[in-house]
Image 1 (tube, one colour):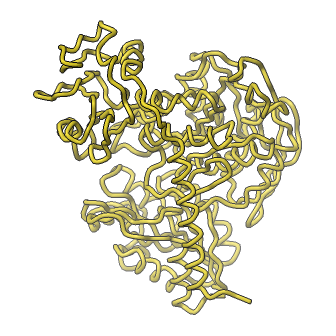
Image 2 (tube, helix red, strand yellow):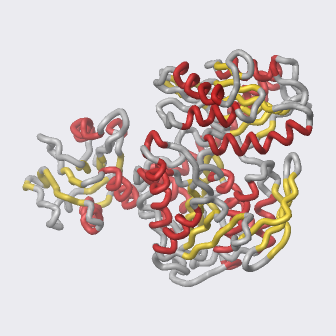
Image 3 (cartoon, helix red, strand yellow):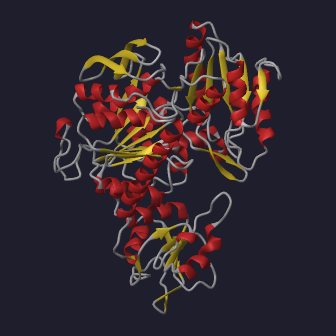
Length: 577
């Protein structure tokens, strides 16, 4: 008995809705129910050198300055928020400055809604509640969030994964490996998260959430029985202090290339944001939460997982030595991975198939064959990063191999869409010049072996890095017989302007508009055009959206599922098997 496409879609939506309700319940359970003295937070801010002064009045008396220990000590707090719309009675409101608004403009509204105190960078005149003045409210928000949720990262083995590309796939591989080794592992990535055994797709266009949401997620993991957490750690999360109070045990560096200059301004600032994760390592290496030292198969004992302070570094990447030096300077141990001879965890004899690969690996403790059910040579490095993490934690080699082999795919990462059409269709999240180049170069042999060429459908996000747009156009123009530039997330930018900037790069590579190059703003129309133009043996790459469930337009988010849209577009051409 089969289910119609419409009914199957309804069943998936019902399942997704039930999972979302369960997920929200776990997060709700992680919210503390008892008030906490504001004085505790004041002392923590003061001890960290963040508190400048306390302005306003406390219990009818002038609030003392930063040098006093009494300011606000009689007040209690029942929540921490940076959104005045979410203020409840006895909340602490933190005024952060965003790209479009300044939280200081909403401090009075927060007080009217019931906030008992505010953390600010500049005191707001005429406010009836005390104001804790700090130099950086984003940094203070991270401190307040960690304090409110009871520093959950101290109860977890926390692995942070950073780099331009490969973070999400490496996160999935590392999680599967730890689970195979008996370590219950939570997950926070671009694609989605995991609390206990429950997984949920990411409902936002954000990888690293603001610090209160992230700290609540970590606390939910602890309550659900996770003993480790894999946290995809972006340059945004680092530069904006969202992860500032997370007690990282291991940091993994995947690679570094051009991205996110709309936030960082320069490549060097982008690199330094990622370096800060490694500069923050060090401390009491080799200890457990319980004070003992457990290793390898001892995971899950009362002491908790073995707590190294270590960095896992891609030594094949030119930036690898800089990240390794930062970790060593912080007092952390360093292990390198790659295909080069100097790597401590090294892949040899890589054998690629259309949907999987095998390679031999050599580590300081063992050597053997690894099976990977993922396509793309670049995934060898992602798998090696996980193997190197296994070395740091001294996991059983057989469990490492079992965990890696268990991952059959990552949503929106090199996803094949096969409905009986005579050409290939791949959905991938590639949205930087480097990742687009890597994916196209992986797909090129597949297309040529079938007597075809490459077709790329992609765009670039609005109100984001503009320098990468012509770079991506050139990358595609140099490798594809047909390039169709379309909307990704234009936001408030004129779509036509974005597409023209990308197209300029493709034209510089020799493509001519109206022949091998088209700009089609509507992504559905662009997909239809690509499939209609595809010849037998061609490979069509749908890049940039991957797992995401919306396209952000000037008027807000519009529902969009790249995989489903591709299936529907193929059906319109008669391919539905």
